[in-house]
Image (tube, rainbow, N blue to C red):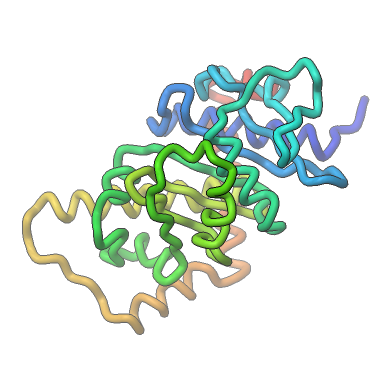
Length: 246
């Protein structure tokens, strides 16, 4: 039996993340993008073929591209230009960002339009307390000059709200970036539901929020959660449609 390569594992995990966009109702047709850094000497990453829906992504139809926009396979199809700008920016400068996940979920886009951003209204929201970056809207990111500003806004944070746009998370693995995105989007949903009531919102004090945030990122509890969630999601996908592995 031919041994499974590291790139094959990355391709399978990335394809799974795209399928989960569809399964979770996070799809924005062909305009959502996730990338994963390849184990190459020069910075390069995998991203989706422009024009395919998330439920059409498989391990084999992902496109390999370097941070200068050169496709590693001369016959490779095109990739989303705005997606390339965002993902190449992070992969060029954040070496811990193996996976970069960007979404246009309804809840994420709604909170991205709020002046106050994400509030620590719930234990889930507190996971991102003082750990969330904000990037001010500059239009569709087609100009490569914005890459430095995206990187500067993200800093050393693992999650971000792109104002008037959507959400972004990075991770040391596809599993970690997905875990963070799942709960960042959940935090946005919680906030919107609370705001719908029209009642005064309870915002705990700094010490309580910081304590909970540190609890939720404490190892090995945190990594165990990432691994368990990802394994469960892969089982769900295999039951729904295992063609993401193709």
